[in-house]
Amino acid sequence: MQYTLKKSLGQHFLHDEDVCHRIVESLSPGASTVLEIGPGGGAITKYLIEKKFTHYLCVEIDEEKVNYLHKTYPALQGHIIHTDFLHMDIPYEGPFSVIGNFPYNISSQIVFKVLDWRDQVTEVVGMFQKEVALRIASKHGSKDYGILSVLTQVYYNVEYLFDIPATCFTPPPKVVSGLLRFQRNDNPYGIDDYHSFRKFVKAAFSQRRKTLRNSLKSSFPAEQLQEAIFGQRAEQLSVQEFVNLYRQLKG
Image 1 (cartoon, rainbow, N blue to C red):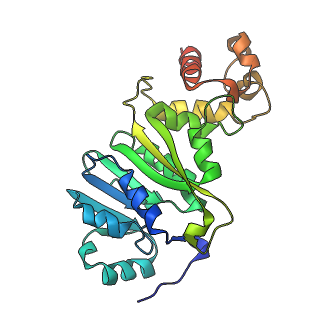
Image 2 (spheres, rainbow, N blue to C red):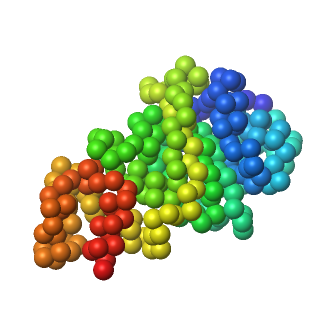
Image 3 (cartoon, rainbow, N blue to C red):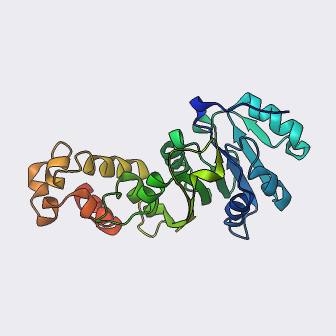
């Protein structure tokens, strides 16, 4: 049984078996409960099911791919959730790892969903468009540093593992991809209200070219924004400085 490519779902199928192996082997050796996002034609799925995890599920939105996977890999019976990952409920009660060749067009939304599940997602191994991967992994002072960088790095240690060239895919995308690994850092910054912190970080980056004083003036009174640090731009602040500033302004 064959399947078709759906551009509307951002589908590019990985065919380089060496890269498929490397992605799967990037999961921590202790991973036992795993959710794969977007198995597609099963490029890494076929290696994941060989791992004999204690619990394995995959989530796929495309009915054609679900049917293909069921017929091609009988071992997946009962392990495929046919739904949109962005709208699904958390699939496990305890901690779990996430892995996937993430569709480029929703990869940032996938990260935000993982952050909503941060108390249970201990690790992520994900393939992104390289530009997005660099954004997530970048440090302060870089033009790539932004909302995704700060929010992800508050809760996870992020590693850029390796590039994945366009030639590894069918059809080849117009961009290079990159593999990231997030490992939960158990919130050393002590942020107890993620949604409030996220709102603060988004406001700080709302006008990247302007100072924090300008970006935050609609959220806080002017007398709270007098210190020299508010003369800097958001991209100049480290994750720790963001946390410190958030605490200071929230009082």
